[in-house]
Image (cartoon, rainbow, N blue to C red; front, side):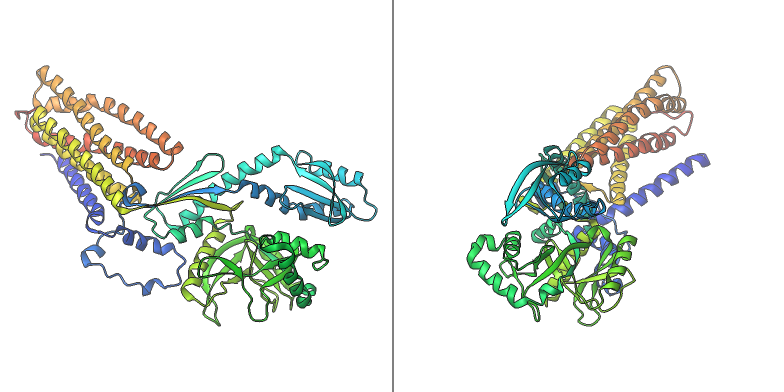
Length: 599
C-alpha cells in the first residue's frame, strides 16, 4: 500500500479518537447540568474565588474536556414562561420621560412653563404656562417641536387649576407599543445569555406576549425574578428641605391612609398627587418609598434607623441605567455585606463627577423600579465613575442572590415596560426521559434497518458504508459537544436524517462503481472512476441541502434552529465520511489490480 493510503488512514484514526474523546463526557457524566455549570462558572460574577472551588470528580473525568452535549427543554425538562409585556405602561412611561425634555426645550425657546405633568392613568401631558405665557405660545411650541406626537385636546381643571391637555397620537402610541415588545425581546435575550442557559427559546407570541423556554432551569422563582425585573435605575438628588419636614409629611401620610382608602393609598402616584394637592409636596418633588419583601412574598414600606421608610427627591433624573457601563457583585469593605458595584460610561462618569462635586454633604437617592434602594450622603467628590448599591438586608445569602440578579439586569439593560408572567410551566425530567428514549429508539431502529439493507444489498462494500455511518454519527455527536449545541427532539430527527443522507451518498457512489464494473473495468479502476464521477452529484445534493439548513437557522427559532444545526453538521460529516473515509477503505479492498470487489 502507498504512503498516501497510510496517511489517509492515520487521519481517519486520529479523527475517530478525537471524536470519542469529545463524546465520552456526555456518556460518562450523569449530572450534565453540573458539568455545564462548571464550564460556565468562569464567566459568572460569583464572589467565590476560582482557586477555592474543589473538583471532586474522578480522575478519568477530570482528564476529559469540559464539553457536553446539552439537552433541550423537550428532553431534560426546564421552565416554560409566557410573559405579558405591559405595552400601555410603556406608552405612559414614554410620556413621563418626556416631561423634563419639554421643560428644558421650552426654557431654551424663552417659554416659561409653570408646570408640566402627566394626567393620572393617561398618556396625556398637562401643561400650565407661566407668567406672560399664553395658550398660543404653548400650542405653537408643542406643534413645532412635537408635531404628530401630541395632539391638543382642550383644557382641564386639576387641583383647582387650569391646564392645557396634549394627548399622545394613536400612531405614536402604536409605534411605542411595537418598539416595547421588540426591545423586551432583545433585553431578555441578553439577560438569558448572561445566565449561561444553553439554546434558550425566546420568541414573540401574539401582539404583546413573549414565550421563553429555559432548558435545565429548575429555580422557578429565581428565573422569574431575573427575567421579569424591569430594572429602571434612576439617580436623583434628595430634597433636603422637604426631608427637614419629616413630622409634617408623616402626619399627612397618616391622614392620607384614612382619606384615600387602602387601594388608592397603596398607589404611589395617587398618594404623590394627593400630597401635592395638600401643599405637602412642592412642585418638582416626588416621594418614593423604601420597600422590603416580607416572608409571604409581599412588599411593604421599610422604616430604618434614622429614616421613616420614605424619601422625598427632586423630580430631576441625573443619571439612568443607560449610563451604566458595567455592574458586578462586590462586598462592602466595612460591613462585609454584598452590594452591586457600578461603573459608568464616559458621559455618566462626567455627570456623576460634577454632581458629587457640587453636592458634598447632601444625599442622592438610587431608585430602582420606583423603589429607593439607598440614599447615601455624598462625603466627597467621586471622580472614578463608580458607585455602589447596598442590598439593605442582613441575610447574606438573600443579599447575594439579589445582588447577582440586580447586577445581571443592570448589565443587560432595563426592560422598556413591566413584564408579568401570564403562564408558567415546569417540564419535569420524566417527560424528558420518555422523549429521549422514544427518539433514541426510533433513530436506532431506523439505523439498524439501514445497516441490514446495505450489508445485504452491497455485501462487503455495504460493510464499508456501515463503518462510514458509525463514524458519521460519532463525528456529529462530537461536533455538537464541541460547539456547545443543544440536542432537542428535532435535533435527534436531524441526526436520523443525516443517517439517511449518508446512505444516499454511499448508494450514489456504489451504483456508479457497479456501472463501471459492467463496462468491464477491474475492481480498482471501477472504484476510482465511481468515486470521481459521483463526486459532483454528491456535492450538489449536499450543498443545496446545506443552504436550506442555513436558511432554517437564520430565520427559524427554538426547535427549528436545533434541527438546522444538526442538519448542517450532519452534511459536513457526511461529505467527510462518504468521500474520504469510504474511499480510503475501498482503496484498501481494491489495493491489488486482481482484487475482487464484492458489490
